[in-house]
Image (cartoon, rainbow over all chains, first blue to last red; front, side, top):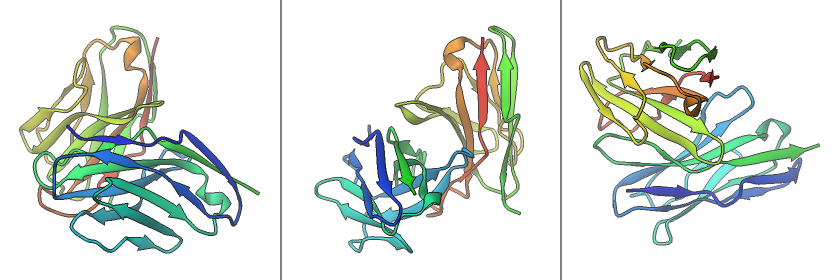
Amino acid sequence: AQTVTQSQPEMSVQEAETVTLSCTYDTSESNYYLFWYKQPPSRQMILVIRQEAYKQQNATENRFSVNFQKAAKSFSLKISDSQLGDTAMYFCAFMKHGGAQKLVFGQGTRLTINP
Amino acid sequence: EAQVTQNPRYLITVTGKKLTVTCSQNMNHEYMSWYRQDPGLGLRQIYYSMNVEVTDKGDVPEGYKVSRKEKRNFPLILESPSPNQTSLYFCASRPGQFMNTEAFFGQGTRLTVV
């Protein structure tokens, strides 16, 4: 079974700073996807970024980028020039290719951006 | 607008009183699932459905039932709710088994069982 671990329950940074959220996972699969989801106080689950395991290049979406280390099974999220609107719970998630397509989530990291 | 709609958004009920949380999607997605979110545990899958009349258990199915009679609807049924089912529930959908696209989530249902 796959597991996802987020070791930082809470983080806090000042506006405009760069912050990195950690995520490690355990799997024996070779073909899978990794995701970062943002959950603001509205509770909506918002996809931030997605990485396909077969792609060596790290995914980027504007101020959000990942550091995907497949051998180390690590998938960290970097937020550059952080903004107040980035304040949210962030979840790392794993999904193997094919089959039931279950998303396996980490415990979450509560990120607060301070003015 | 493409969306997943859950109802109700908030629900307080008493132990043992049957309830249903509805979920509907307008994107003709084949795959639908239910998750519950608890502090320190993240989201865990309860049940999923890969198409009409095809459902299967996720990681935490005890105390829950689902049905998939129509492609767009996937209700979550709690026959006899207990306080340990107090949680935040999410319905999600995606196009199909080999489609590399994101999951669409509903707005969540905050359930409290007293």
